[in-house]
Image (tube, rainbow, N blue to C red; front, side, top):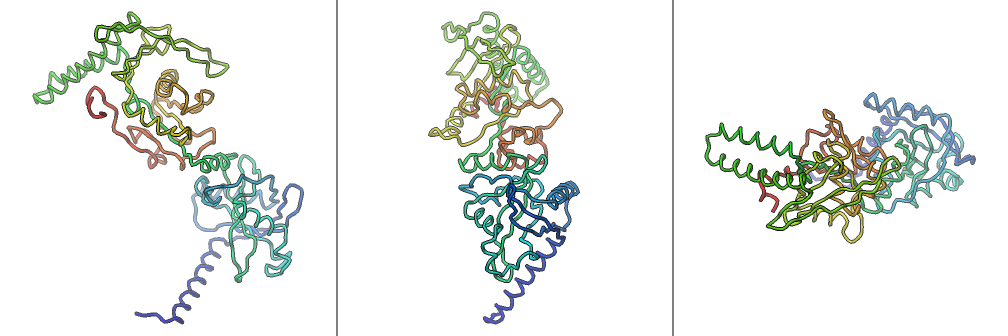
Length: 417
């Protein structure tokens, strides 16, 4: 069927009417309020709340926002300028409840078609926010209210219109800094993702478990594979045994002694310590002691071979591409030492931020990006997780997890080469 010009115009008119009809449904409930910038009165406004079905938690949060702003809206400051992303896109990304309300200049004080309207304080505020790509901010209890200037039309004439978003204090500015720098969040798991570490006890347990499997296995090829795996475990166990007993190892007839490495205090509540380390570069092995005073805390650590390349990429050309975090189910002292071995120059995580950036999850609990980003510098929707397991993460975060094959240097030593 071919449409002529008149039919097309009729369809466009119908489309516009439907659009305004649905908008009137979405923004049905109206309240009156006034807007101040500091102590300066900018004008009276009409607040339109959304009426569509919502989750109860979101509905209650939006109601609390409306209850506050009906009294008055007092702008305390403006956000920084967004250099790359429109404020609307940023807030849609980081808010948990979406748009809280729509705000328009009140028709009771002046008509939207009058020429004086174009110079009203609210219109100047609206123009300033659009031109400078910024938001107007109001403190709202434990939240921040951001007013985003929106292009809007009524009877084909421009008039001031804002959308209101409620977010955690400082979250918008911190996320904007990252976006302006083209920097996002990345969260690493440790064990079997970036490293594999064993104590004398864990070596013995793994060797015993494999030998029991071998005793019941009937497939000759699988037996050969498991015997090779046992041999690799035994070789590394012997290296660790020398380190535990003598603070040295013999490698290719050469005696390699420990080197003392000073670990600076991470806070006023911590003391600096000296750890005895041996680095076997050719084997990608590091021998360290979690508690320098207790030899039983000695561990043999294998670093994932591709880690060096990834670390170089994360800091290429001196520009930080990601804000780096660690989320692990390991104990804290162990996790801090493993990360020190992975990032010895503190290029990925500043030493002053380590205690906040390395998050240890108790056994039996799931990992959560909400807990990782408690400092408010990043939002879960702006982060990528690197882990060898998906199900250890909260269901809400699983879509952000990039699952990598588990690092298995004893089972498949050639897989990483």
